Image (cartoon, rainbow, N blue to C red; front, side, top):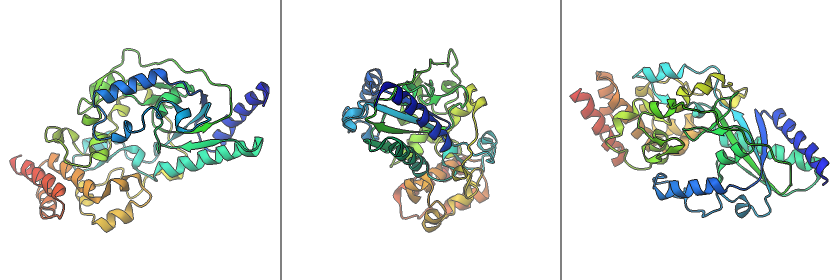
Amino acid sequence: MHEQDLRQLAQKIKQWGRELGFAAVGIADGDLGAAEAGLQEWLAQGFHGEMDYMASHGTKRSRPAELVPGTVRIISARLDYFPPASADPHAVLDDTDAAYISRYALGRDYHKVLRNRLQSLAEKIGTEIGAHHFRVFTDSAPVLEVALAAKSGLGWRGKHTLLLNRQHGSWFFLGEIYTDLPLPVDAPEAGHCGTCSACIDVCPTAAIVAPYTVDARRCISYLTIELKGSIPLELRPLLGNRIYGCDDCQLACPWNRFAQTTALADFEVRNGLDSARLVDLFAWSEAEFNERLAGSPIRRIGHERWLRNIAVALGNAPPSPETQAALGARLDHPSELVREHVAWALARQQVA
């Protein structure tokens, strides 16, 4: 294709992306040298914890053409997810009887939603120009999605390490299309965090150990989602009522004053999870957990870790007969992991 044709195609791709519901689409090359150095340093510090997959792919994560041979460009896309009718997150965090679940997980699993739209965009390109080599990714492969999105002009990496955009804050998902089309690239956006340290100051567990650096081993999202074993004793009280993920750094970020709510029904609140009571969720059987959370990203942690997380939140709640009875009903749970966290929570209830 001629250069003029490629420029026109790039504009069409961005328009098609908007028609598919994406807030924006950008294009970058695959040179991630600076990001690769940062990743290697982060791994060397052990900040990835038990997430061995962060180190197991060598340089494929930071060199797109090694992951998908022939790749010369990456098409990045943003998709807003904040549900418009959800309970106020600050109010939920302040309600010790309520369960706080990260806003991205209140609706349908984003993987399929985003992947299907990216696939449609890639196929639309094929309809326009004929066969082309591509692969679609949605948090499902060794991809440095924030670095690629920043390079493609969709925003900048904030001090909390998430992508930030002046018009959309950070309440959005990212996805990529690796392609062999030599499309014109977009200019990256300069950072706009300035001297602000709101995200660092608000982190409940001090997981943002330096600007642009998160120690996952202290991050509540890691502890409640990625960590398979016991939550460290010293960190349990700091989790509060957060049972799946954490949004504190995003809630504190001034740029999220400009965030947009989602227009997709897929991300609307399901099962009242935006403000559900801890004791009610703790009472779910494994069958109820699997049934009610079918199609939800939460289901992947399994019922055992679900109970583990809620037990910690109940231990952090003010003492009450209802809470103590709920915990007592799980004291003989078959899982040693659950029993341990229930016993800890009961001890907290009784001492308090």
